Length: 233
Image (tube, rainbow, N blue to C red):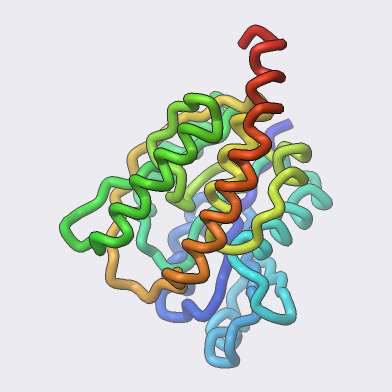
C-alpha cells in the first residue's frame, strides 16, 4: 500500500510557511511540520496552521528534524515521505511530476536536482561541485546529478535511515549515499532554485561537518567496494 506525507523541516522561516502549506494542501496529503527549536515569532507563525506539528525542544539541525518526521511517518503507517524545505528556494510547481513519478516507481528515491540561475553565490556553486565529486568517489562511481537539493520523495527504507548519523546540513548528502548503497534506484527531476531567502547554512560549521562525513565515508569505502564486487553489481 502506497501512503505518502509531506515533511517540512522548519527553523525560523516564518515568511513563507503559510504559503507553502496552502500550496501543499492542494494535493490532499498529510502535511507534517517539524519545528527544530524555532524562536517564538516562528512558532507563532505555524500555531494556527491545520497541519501535524512536531517539535524538537532545541535546534538539533535539519537532518535531525527530518529524522523526527521519518519516525512519525513510519509509526503512522506511511510508506513514503516527501521532503520540502521551508525556505521556498525550490520551485514547488514540480510537485505533481514528482508525485506521479513516485507513484509509478514506488521503490525508487525521487530526487530533485537544481537548475541554478545567476543569483547562486559562487561559494555555494563551487561547494556543490566539490561535494558532487566526493559523492562520486565515496559511492564508487555512483552517478548523481545533485547531492544537496533537499526536495525528495523517500521510500521509507529503515536501513538507509538508521545508517545516516548526520543531523545538520550534511544530512541530505549522507542519506542520499546510503540509499544508493542500499540498492535503492534514484529518479531525477530538475528543480529550478532561486536564492535570496534566509539560509541557515553556516559556511565554516557546515562545510566542516560535510568534510567530516565525507572522510568517514571514504574510510569505509573499501567495505562498500568489497560488498559491491561480491554481489557482482
